[in-house]
Image 1 (cartoon, rainbow, N blue to C red):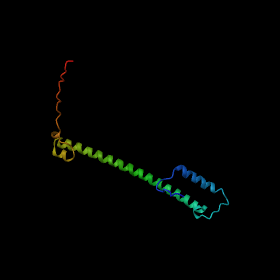
Image 2: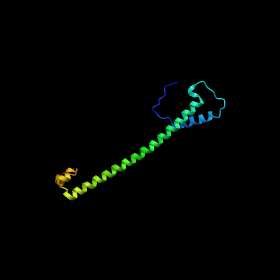
Image 3: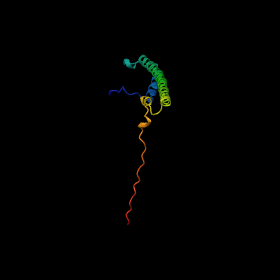
Image 4: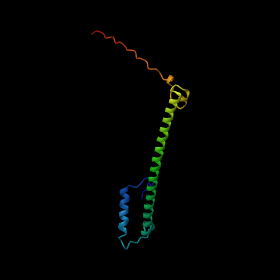
Length: 127
């Protein structure tokens, strides 16, 4: 049997087929095997463990999504508070103040003035 890559997830179709096979085994009354990993008790234990781990994963995914949403909202709240603070600093000290520059705003006097572009007259050569 080739080595199995247990780092990847099984496809849901494969798991569904395995569950159907397990339920089909329960209809066989005289199933008996010498393989320890294929006994009905071991299969039952593995099935219950799989369901428990899937439930744990789903609960943690829900908690992760809730935590991610809370973190995203907190980031936006902080960002909006910083924007409000910058506006308050600009209003209180002016847009050309050292205080405005200290909070990350560019001083009005440091802005480059727009310059006119020189129009270039194209000399058309007679044909």
